[in-house]
Length: 259
Image (cartoon, rainbow, N blue to C red; front, top):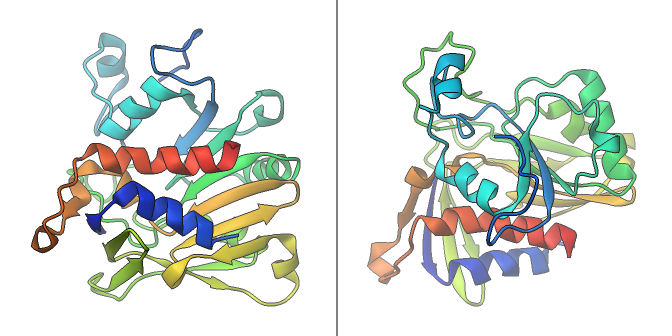
């Protein structure tokens, strides 16, 4: 999926929300907030693609720009379980195309949010993340999100884009226009599951903002936007967008949840 922007990108994303009702450091670095985040992901953003225990211990790995940005701004740690989530004093959970989650972890996350927790969930039905890993490699990012049990429980269904991934969704805002290519969408489910969460959908149904008990979740039907290389600029509009804008997008999500 590619994101093309013209106009003011950050104001555009803020407008969207108005329409929709490695280990952490012991002390914040300069510019870092005290916001504590737990990240669960299958994407190669923490240590880089193909990282081994040897390369990690030797310091030969390189984090993706998005994770380097998060590490400098938040008290963030990557986890593979939510067993201790309730007692962790976490402010925000980020699920970024997570691996298959144990039912106990799904239940723990749902309970934590219902008790007032906040979550940003990036689940992509057709991930286009560039990778050199073979199809059978367990380190390869998941091509399709595996969060249907949780989404369905909250009354949502994740839909893939057109088979060729070429479909475009244009998001119009007073200050800007964002065109997304090959992005997924959400479909509300009717029936009993709809009562488990109250979700409002954005333009084109690409982002869901859900009230889950006492907590909230922002769910995006895409995870490719975390990859700087998959952002582009609508040159015909004369727009100029730097790669850091892709990273700032998640800052808006976090700020919206903890305000």
